[in-house]
Image (cartoon, rainbow, N blue to C red; front, side, top):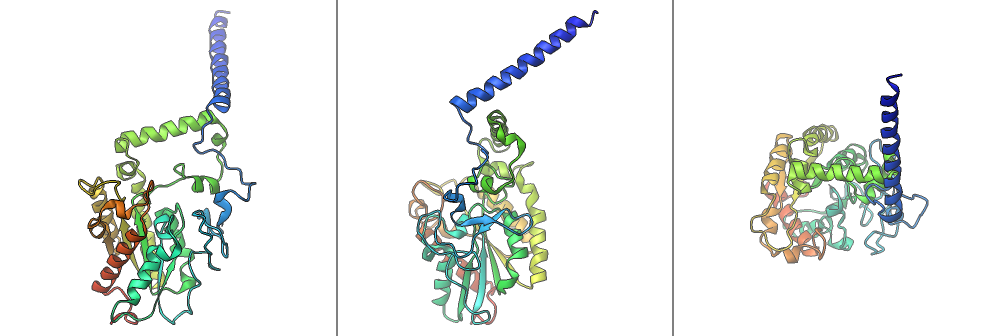
Length: 339
């Protein structure tokens, strides 16, 4: 009998806690809905995530661009070709040196017409380069892809295109794994049980923010590269890409895009991170070009879209010229394309 009061107190605590949690969930649902990792409504075919995307059949790759679509998130109504990437249909295999470019929204060219993306600009500047023969540059960039997705594209989608060279456009947020709250990634990711609760999503968001503060002093980019961050998964991914490149018998070149600042290049915040990427990519056996030096010759306001961190047409043009120079100077273009 002496245990009854203790058991009653425990029961009261449990019930009170449960009621408090239920009340918090109801309050959030009614007065302060949590958008972070909210389960998507996939029944709406007009949702922007569905406009040009579809689930991917490649194991581990959650989504891809749907072939032959005619609408893009930038509302430019540009076509996606039959292979499911942005731009014109590729030319006949073997008729020109083929360069395949992998990457995320920087490569896709979010916010600019297809003609202003850096793969398109690279094709133009190579065509104007003495001693370089016909070149066919294909843009396989997909918005919100990570380096892990790009490794899967290299392993499963590149071979049928028979490229002579592959370029991987690496952006500083590419090591991010999971969804990271990115709407497109959330849309195609399997819904986890806790996502149905506003309270649990609020806790998950707070935990993410705590990790960013602890590892990156509030900067999500720094947090990715700090000890315990997602960067720790990247070296193994680079090694898998190196194995794939050997199997395909094709050279892979990495091109690192900086996060273009809003006002000035003075005291650029991520120089150490660029060195970290450069070292890892070289150790994996890949040539690497850091575009920061080329872009720093220009006012950031000319290179960055207003209210966004994606490059302008000029930013992509500058990047394409630097890539051209790098490929020519390092003799990375196949002999059929070089002078």
